[in-house]
Image 1 (cartoon, rainbow, N blue to C red):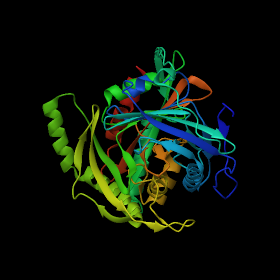
Image 2: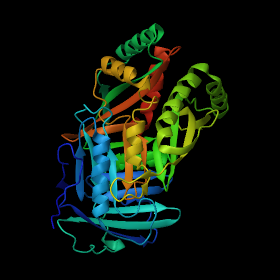
Image 3: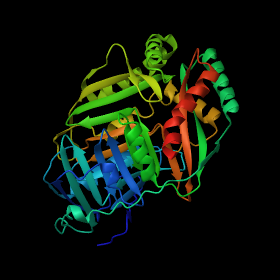
Length: 446
């Protein structure tokens, strides 16, 4: 049985899993091992954390790269086939137990970054006062389930070194040049044919020492506990926006659009929150985003619920207009066994991405304008990131407030931020908003 990560590539056009791949999985309950983020050992890390709960993974059992316009369907088919063939002993039976893959998709199918599913060798989870450990191995034929290591056999996390001094430089374009692109977008909106476009910018960060992503994760989780803190394949961040959560037939999507920077004064921030809730410009932007999510979910749901008005989500650096769209997934006939099934979280991600919150309205026109104006590869910024289990349950956030580490130079990261541009947007204010959205990653790097 090989200890090196296996490289799996689906047969061209089929999306089916390698017939030789067989996962051997065991999940067992354990006592509280302490904060999950402090369990991670050096090296490649995978994590999905919020308010101290979530999942962290050690090592790689399988890595499944996917490319092309059908990357979501390919990933969903490959994972479903692998999960169906797995030999599983699950003593906990919660979402996130048994076989789990961490996933990170590219924003555009043409991105050089590609997309990936990563199955960790060891996974530790925490939910509702219960903790568990899952061990996963891969073999070429079913041969039983691997034995579970004792708690004391988990990797020693050791020291987490600081990255040292960090220098920043313009990424694809300077701030003034980016404001010029915002002005061009406003001209296109005024001319008709497009209502909203989300323009992103990047910032280059170079640290004195190689950046240990555990350092970044610990600081993000401590500073932004209400966000979903994540790390998958060098992409690290703390997103406030849940693209889609699936759990036992229930689906939730948190939509954020409309932002105002906090002042640091509580009384003034309350006044700012009230002005945000009344802002016609921000309410219009938010409506586009909510509508796009509700329309994408409707074909997959027996019923949906869309609140009439948004609430204001308070974060340490900014405030957002937010709406939680919920639904009950509709059953459909399975194509092979003939039984009733519901869409997986990967199926729903395919339907939802890209939403108006990160692309614009209409989607196709906005995507074309993004390609024309941004002049950069978004990589995996603003795309789905999270996890999926064997049932198809899981959580996928939108990769915001994030950075991607350069695998060829671990001292270098690209930081990303974006703003929704609608009629009435002000280029100076949008640049200031993008700077505010870069604060979480800049602070995390220290």
